[in-house]
Length: 304
Image (cartoon, rainbow, N blue to C red; front, side, top):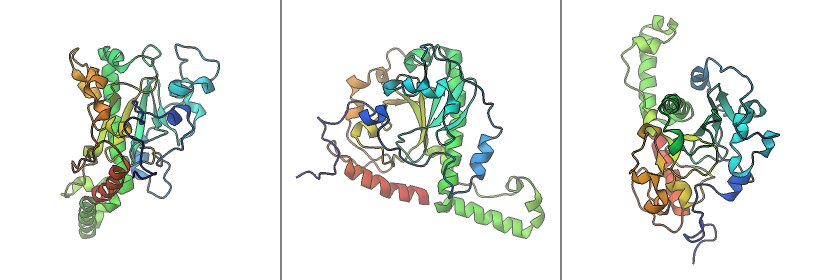
């Protein structure tokens, strides 16, 4: 007899990478946002975010709206481009003339942010069409690279204290400074020392667009690889980030014959649930067992 707490069966789960509750904003948000965790040191994030972006009104979208509250359902992301100043720092990380960067309201990983282009001629296009513009694509690719660094530093800020690799480097740094206290007076003392490399958190960051976007406005996902989130409910949620359904912006422009242009035909969202870290196959019926396994894997990942 199926457990009542298990996720829906195949014929009941959504064929989209988003739920109706997420579209209407009625589901509860998930993990802490970047920059809002008061229990952790903020040095790395503060360093990354300096200098602060200029604050100024956003250009109005090509579909004029009377008020940002009218951006509902699949149009919900448009509110951030319409007026990013209407949201607090727990939602909007930064914005400039070209982009708004936000914490995903329904994250599918420990760290999950979205890059929203602000060009009205692009933000209502499917990414396959928007990225045909090579100049625009290059701008997006450059920004995504910066955001991957941001997420990697946020992972180090939150979880570096659990990492054996990071502890080894910190111990070597402390020993070197104790041997030569004058080094501590330098602004970046570790740059002058022969230290073991710290953990490379960039390898735990993924990014890209969904081949079939769930929201109307163009958005690029940048997130940690763990897939640990209270907002991950369905096989489609998981597979939308663990299959070719997620296409890295570095892979653009796509060939017209690229199979990823046809996610439904390829059945990416209907694939078996396979752990990203160890490869264990959990079949295709229930996600609860995978989620329990991912929690364990996350704890092991933090220790690396």
